[in-house]
Length: 169
Image 1 (cartoon, helix red, strand yellow):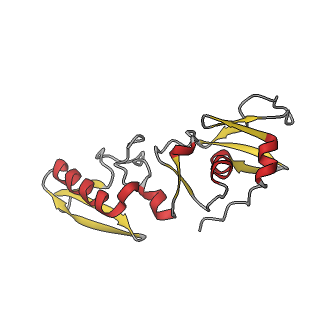
Image 2 (tube, rainbow, N blue to C red; image 1 turned 120 degrees about the horizontal axis):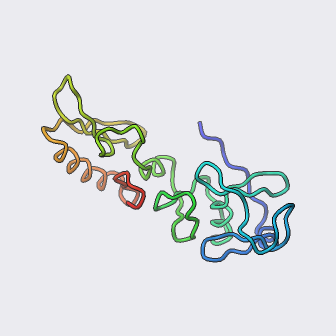
């Protein structure tokens, strides 16, 4: 189960520490070993992080809070790039919606998110997740048919969070 993120410091403190310019958080003041005026935080695991009072916070959460005045439990990067923290690339999401917007897995062999070759059934299988359940949509003679079908299902079931698996979907 995903743990709840730490509550952020109040917006006044954040505004005293940082300035936001074009989706990048800059130090307003010298902080430990970081000079004022440089980009705040460090990059790790595809996201940017800053420390405040010995606690680590995701930069996208701080930016969302500074621009919207609240911070939800989960924030989705629309373009799938965890380093693109421009406010118009961040949106509130449920865990399911966030998963809908995931990139294609590295071990995918078909090149199509949710489609795989099933040797025993001698066909392409299309599967999609919705309501925390994986559903098989059917067996198809060609990968192209399976892809076309799953793309339509993804749009119907995932709406604005539909992502074919490529970063800029």
